Amino acid sequence: MLLIIIKKVKNMKKVFAVVFLVSFAINVYAFNINDPAPSFKLDKLDSGAESLNALLGDESSRNIVILSFFDTQCKPCLNEIPLLQEIYLKYEGKGVKVRLVSIDPKGKEEVAPYIQEHKFKIPVLLDPYGIRLAKWFKVVENNRATVPQLFVIGKNGTIKKHFDGYDPKLVEELESLITELKKEAVVQTPKIEKAKNEITLLYTNSTNGHLESCECPENPFGGLLRRATFLKEFRKENTSYILVDSGDFFSAREDELKAKYVSKAFNLLKYDVMVPGDQELILGTDFIVKEAQTNNLPLVAANFEVCTLTNCRPLGKSYIIKEIGKYKVAVIGIVSPKAFTFFPKAIKENLKFSDPKERISEILQEIKGKVNLTILVTHAGYDEDRKLAENIDGIDVIVGGHSQTLLKQPEKIKNVLLVQAGQNGQYIGKLIFTLDNLGKVISTSNELVALVKNIPDDAEIKTLITEYKKAVEEENKKLLLK
Image 1: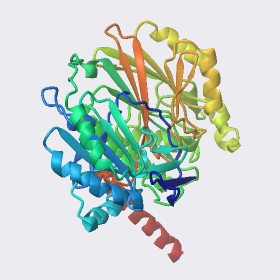
Image 2 (image 1 turned 30 degrees about the vertical axis):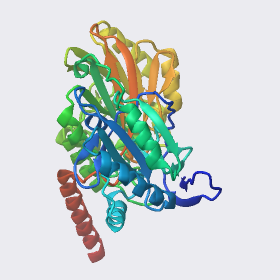
Image 3 (image 1 turned 180 degrees about the horizontal axis):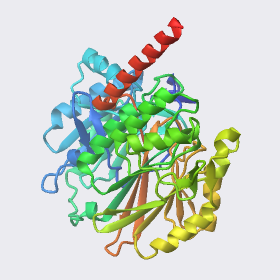
């Protein structure tokens, strides 16, 4: 897929374009003047991160926020930024916060030399590919990005002005607008203890053995190396969450060594629920049973058993109930027998399945009245998930797997939300449920977080990868000696 960056020049016919190869789908959002600006937190070019709330400040001393989206290949951007710098130097610390937002794919690697070369002083926030923020403002739309674009956010956090393209009169227009917006009265908002009334569902699927991103054009992001960093940062500020995976965490080929290291990595990630997929059985039933025991993998599969000559036994629990604050969340795991259609007979004959719909109904009866939220995690595929949503009552959300479908926004069927996060561990899904004091869901919001290059490597996973690569070298040496 191509992401085309178009540089617009106001009142001119000529446009400048540069093409980047990208292999992700982009969510498209809409905005209107006076809409609330999206909440965000982006890495800064120098160090740390900055959020919209931090830029706006507290209610006793609110700021006007100006965001200008650019990239380093954009000639009109190079015309605009010096004008914007005049505003920055004049108003910084005087009720106005000016920030540049870079959508350059390589983040700091591309932006730092550019800023240094042109001696720009405006602080820069990093949004590689425009995935986190630019998409919301429609700077990135239909896989095309148009820059420069500038947005002015008032003291109450609403969008007040949009400049589409370079404007030679930018300084004059911004000064007039700043004077007007400084008169805006700050609306006092009631303090809401959101953390107590929100539950975040973090979901992943189809890691396919990617310990790290290959950094190739068709897959420039992802990997457990970055996923671990994201999860550790998330956990610093959040306790009201549940983390699930819907299977195919091993590779799609027989690679016992890599599978062992993937198991070790998932042990470090501390999942609440992992539903086994067909790829977890490629190396046989004994292998996944041993890895689950050795690495404390929390397998959950209500309708799936593995058999030996002496017995058939469940591969994990049927469901779990996790207490999150004052709420209780149930997670049921389901594996479709259709996922194993093309498996060798030697493996298939050791697998025992019960009807998914019947098992789900039985469990829903068991937990009826005991939980506030019910999550079904399936390794069945998108089409099967849709059928389950149409035919079963009592499920709030289905986290899918197997089909490697990238659902940019949840699909709603009856009262059930369907989510799935694509392939190769490129994204982490983040679905937030807001509940009232009686435990009823009153709203939801979803985000696919792309594990882009500017997310630092996790030290523990990096150590595992180093060990894995050394082990691969040793195996290769043995093969050469034979």
